Image (cartoon, rainbow, N blue to C red; front, side, top):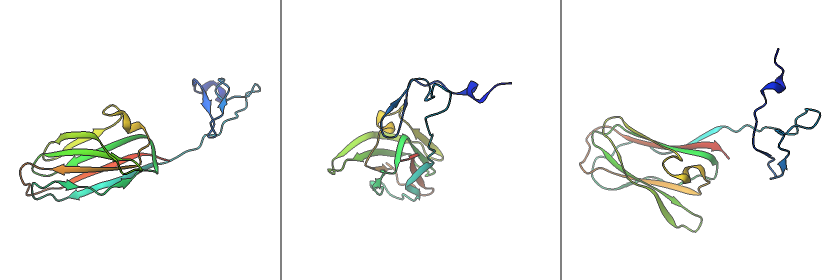
Length: 156
């Protein structure tokens, strides 16, 4: 029968929350006891828009979300149920108020068009970000549906 220690994952190194590097022996003492406590954190999601009705061709700007409580691998979930395609831009802001575009000209198709953006789309999605906001615009005025967008990650 397998013992619990038979299933310990192998990592390059283990780092404590204070930054101290623990031995490369998977965080184990020479007697086999663990010197690592694993702390769990939950998923966190914030909403830019929830079924936002867009009925003209004006540029719509989301609220600015402060993301200090989200860390780790971040992801953007965008859902378009409007009867027109939407062009989306995503911006980040630093503590000095400077704005940086990270995604521009993203086209989200009409009627259940969806987009999931991760670090594969931009490396900033796995880095801490102070604030983020989005803009959305239709080239033809939609008459039905809504537009939703959220950002999620691990609770900091």
